Image (cartoon, rainbow, N blue to C red):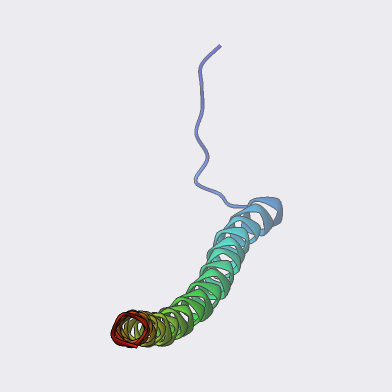
Length: 91
């Protein structure tokens, strides 16, 4: 039985061709829109990270300031203790 090939294109084949092309284009745009959504979420996430970095920087400055004040209070307390010892010893 010989295999024959027909150059004729019927309506069903055209529907399949255009349907396939529409599916590929639709899939492309669906994936593109999802990538855009993920990109938008990633950008928002980066902004949140930058805000957190700023907040951590401010907290770091406050902690450093508190540590310096704690050292000053400790030094002042040591001075007062030594001055009280001198007053008791000299009195």
